[in-house]
Image (cartoon, rainbow, N blue to C red; front, side, top):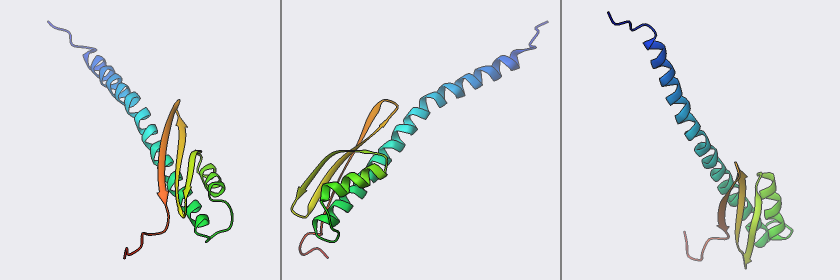
Amino acid sequence: MNDDRGSGSILALSIMAAVLAIASLVLPLSVVLSAKQQAAAAADAAALAAADVAVGALPGIPCAAAIAVVAANGAVLDGCRVDGTIVTVGVSVTVIGLAVRGRATAGPPASGVN
């Protein structure tokens, strides 16, 4: 007679090991994707703030405004380029040893755009 006692325990342990393996692969990916969104949001906000300064809506220096906004969003400013009233910023967020980058450009709308 075959004795199948304990086979359910082995199956349950195997399933738990598979779930743990999948979770250990998905967790770092989700952390990096979250950091990518954080970098994009920081770049967008910094570019908009710097563009507001560049067009004269706010006082100050455009790239200084970008630095303040980027720092408030938990990122680091990699670059800031002002071309008249158009500002382009690059930012990075470091997570699990990886630098995740974001870039954004902001300025007034082009002439003739409704």
